[in-house]
Length: 324
Ligand SMILES: [Zn+2]
Image (cartoon, rainbow, N blue to C red; front, side):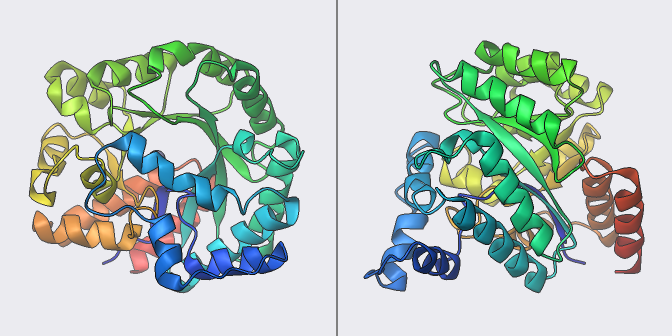
C-alpha cells in the first residue's frame, strides 16, 4: 500500500527542474544553468541548520511565479506530474502575497492558480497561506477574503506559514478571527520551529489541522487536548530532519501520536526543497516503524477524513483507497 494523498504540499517548494525550465521558457528566459545547478538552488543539503535557512530556498522558484500564465502553467504542470506518480488527491498551498512582484493582485494570482488546477485531471484543492510577519496585516486579511470568495471553487482553506520562531503564532489571531467569521476552514503551521505553546495558540484559534505539530510531544496535556479536539497533524518527517528538529527517522514520534490516538497524515511539505514526496515519506515511516497493513490503511483513511475535500469527493476517495 502506498500513500496516494498529500495534504501538506507547498507549490513554491515543489517545483521540479523540468517545471522550472518550462516556466523559464514561458518567460522567454534562457536558463544557462545545468540540472545540477538548478537542483542546488531548489534543494537544501545536509548543512541546512534550521527553518530560517530552509525558507531561503523559496526565493529562486518564486522568481518564476510572478505572471498569471506562469502561475497557471506551474500548477497544471505540477498536478500532471503528481498524477503520473499515482496521486489521487492533493491540497496544494501557496501564499498569494508572494506573487505580486509584477503587479498582480492576490485575486489575480488565485484565479490563475484555479485555472491551472482546472486544466489538470488531478483531484486537487488549493490552500491559501497567510504569512507570519509584522508588516503584512492587510495582505493577510486580503488573503482570507479571497479564500472566502473562492471557497468550494478550487480553494478549500487558509494557512499560516513562514518563520515560526521569529513571528509567534499568538500574534496572528486576527487572521483566524476573520477566517472563522467567514466560515473559511484553516490549518496552521505550529509546533515545528516553535514549541508546544504555538500549537496551543493555533488550536485556541480553531484550527482543524496543524502543519507539523511534532513538538506537541513536549507537552502530554497538549497531546490529550489534540485528541479531545479531534485535530489532525500534517506530519512531514524529512522536512523536520532538514530543519534539525530530529536527527534520524527513528526519533520521529509516530508511535507517540499513535499511543495518544491522534490522527495524522504523512506529507512531503516541499518536494524540491526536501527532495522527497509523500509516497517516499510514507514508505520511510512504514519501514522505520514496521507499520502493519491495517495501520497504513488507517493513516490513508484519516488523510481522506481530515482533508478539506467535500463529502462527495471524500466518499469517492474512500472507495478508491478500499480497492487498493
Ligand atoms: Zn509547510
